[in-house]
Length: 519
Image (cartoon, rainbow, N blue to C red; front, side):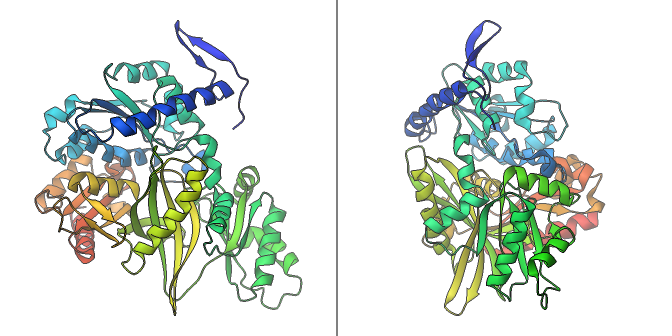
């Protein structure tokens, strides 16, 4: 985003603030961010310290691509897992959403809180809404509402340290942080492009990881055609290639090109040029080729080989770089990808296979070292395509996400509810009871036309009657999210926790069976 001229504006006699997207705003943000280090050192470790966390679950990304995500506004509800912070008795939470969230959904989350009554938690929870159902990013809506911003500020007690927790940090979240005068636990947006598809490939190479053959920093249709041509010439057996916009979401910035029919072609480049529009299969539904190309031109992108193998998995590793510079492996997952192209995120198993979970952690730390050297802090994830060869698994890194993702909220729910920790070297998660190991299967994409019309009240009633809820005593069971999307879109999310991977999957099968019967 272009940065405006460096100047300052005053608001209704209040302290002067820099003009949005100005150099002055970026400078002030960096000053505010310095307070995060002090908070992390003194406030974060103390569960009894008075503090306020402002949750901004905005998916501040390309609006056209986001509009293709069914029930996209309800994806804000995934960060309701952060209400579990209320288990700390002197912590306040302010949660802002596009639309008002049904009270029964809030009650459902508060009921899960270990060791805290619902009454005590509600006194420390503030829910604010923009009352705006448009598909635009939430943060953009908040910035248009100065009275709402003032309300957020008024809800932060004077004796509390405060910070923002966001799904993603862009220039818009930076502007909001400066308006609120509180830091964000996340990456400075000036560094966001360091992990886009093109720069991610460069980081992987710097780490010595086996990057799929390909080309980065492309911007035009001619660049795509040239890249596809060279890939096929270098590997005549290649059947498919992936074309990716630098900044995509859940695979919706990707497209698959098939070389089918090119086996005996003499002029390969001309053949590709003639068929690029017809044989490039876009992952995003209803996104036209001209629109995809326009985004590719403006954002840039890559072309790389489609990794194939007889035994292939799609694992990921989630890491964190703390404000104090410590590198941590948070979790590993085996993702389930689907759709016609196999590029759409459907769900995940936690942890990743014991065959390679520890190795994924080590690879994640290599990437973390490079990101840290560039000033990155906060959570990030690395996605891989892993192929089993004779000598073991080969992990091809394909993407870095400098934000929360589809595996963030399920793990946070498990961690908040069990107070446990992921053992990186063993690739296992242990609860606070020490000897108990837990697994889960999660999905954001449990959907059926038959589910349409089920209200949040209906879902909770069905769950209670069929013993489909999380049991804090056994530390097993089911947790729902995306509940608000159920009635209109027939879609919801689940986290199924079990003492074995099989038991977690059995919970999921039971949910599907019960919902089919009840609906």
